Amino acid sequence: MIDDADVLIVGAGMSGLCAALEAARAGARVIVLEKAPEAERGGNTRFSNGAIRSVYEGVDDIERLVGGLSEAEKARAEFGSYTREQYFDDLARVTQYRCQPELADMLIDDSRDTLFWLHEQGVRFLPLYEWQFKLPDGRIRFSGGSALEMNGAGAGASDALFRAAERCGVQIHYETAARDLIESSGKIVGVQARRGGEDVAFRAPSVVLCSGGFEANVEWRTRYLGPSWDLAKVRGSRFNTGDGLRMALGKGAMAFGNWSGCHSASWDLNAPDVNELAYGAIFKRDDYLEGVVVNADGQRFFDEGADIRSMTYAKLGRAILAQPGQVAWQIFDSRGSARLHGEYRVKQSARARADTLEELVGKLDGLNGEACLATLRAFNAAIRDDIPYDPGKKDGRCTRGVDPPKSNWATAISEGPFEAYAVTCGVTFTFGGLRIDGDCRVLDDVSAQIEGLYAAGEMVGGLFYFNYPGGSGLMSAAVFGRRAGRAAAQAALVKCAGQ
Ligand SMILES: Cc1cc2nc3c(=O)[nH]c(=O)nc-3n(C[C@H](O)[C@H](O)[C@H](O)COP(=O)(O)OP(=O)(O)OC[C@H]3O[C@@H](n4cnc5c(N)ncnc54)[C@H](O)[C@@H]3O)c2cc1C
Image (cartoon, rainbow, N blue to C red; front, side, top):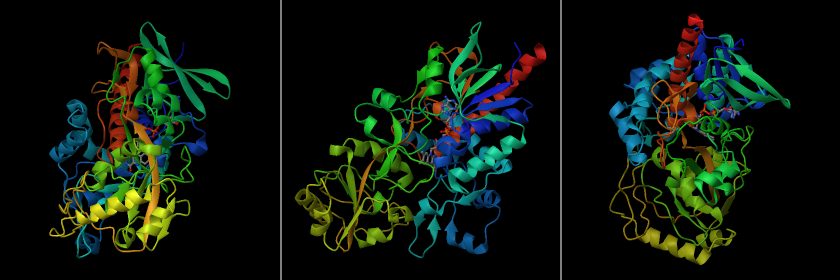
């Protein structure tokens, strides 16, 4: 039997394209199978906002990656730096010290080099001003970690990586869904796929699974994440239905990591059940720090100011899903409204506006208005006015005597006009995955390598639990994709040389 390629990759998101590029540059013949049609290619990567978390050593790194900063830009921002220790601390803290240290080390230690490598592939970067502290004099202080975003967000990066892969001779087969792994004498030697209603077999000595998690699979969400997860809205690709996970588990791979956990954020109630590329990020509702969030009983249920946005937004979706009717309202007064990002203003927004709070709550269908007004009065009265409000840092301006507290940036909801945005849970990606070694080889249930099988991206289990530091998804996909591509190519080429 003749191999179709040296390395066969399933899925053309960040992890699959990085794997393809590394394998091709190592001299391997590479085929990528992609379930989506070409017009919808790019997976969750394409839907992403493009924030990317990495170790960086200071303004020089930023300057090299964005291709120069003007003196005015340098004067306007304190870029700081982000050390491997800070990255490790952030990752460990938000995952409640469950993330596997060896995976964390790989992610963090490869992160800076991977930024420069992505740049060499044609991905362009911009300073991520949006997520940082705003100082009273108008300057911006970087809060660490996600200092950069990819130019053109996920779509821009995805286009750049497809171009690079095509230049390297990587063959991409669209509308070709992998269905099964082909095994011979205990080794994985290819993939059985479905294309245009026909079964097609692809053979290769190395197979790299990069087909994402199971966030778009209603039945698996309910099965693994639990009751009500069928009701969450999908923020990204409709194609990530757990196919690669199912195929690998069927060959004895070890399930690993937080299978009941996922990344889920606050998402506009008017969003469709499954997102579409045309909408992009318009349903993102991540400015809850600027106000309060109440449920249908009029009660707060989440510390809106527990930490900076990038450390809390990925767990707010789960908190909303647990509320009656899986709905909540973000409420802002005129000062909070003035700080909201542009996506809040789109015409699809589930928004209500009124001059008084009494009038506002009357407009919110399903909300216990009286209880909500009582909550807002208690909240306003509980604010520590003796601590100044300061968006330039975690200011400690908190509430006292209300449960849950708001730990930072607490400001009274008192100056009209007022706005409310109805939100629900948007699921981003699932955390449960496979166990891999340092070369991204998939391990079986006794931790032995399944020969010929590799995995990367959302399919890696053991890195994220409960929550995640913003910008780590793309970096994890790139880091593990690169590792998988290199190792898969090396193993395949050694095998070919020996034949
Ligand atoms: C709205 C949104 C915003 C986000 N913003 C950010 C951000 O700013 N920063 C950040 O770090 N992360 C962000 N993320 C998360 C990030 O996008 C993902 O963690 C990352 O892109 C995952 O890359 P991946 O290669 O593992 O998966 P994907 O990019 O999803 O690629 C998986 C690919 O596999 C294909 N596939 C699935 N099944 C099969 C099959 N059977 N056969 C063949 N192909 C198959 C899919 O079609 C898809 O193209 C965001 C995600 C979303 C949805």
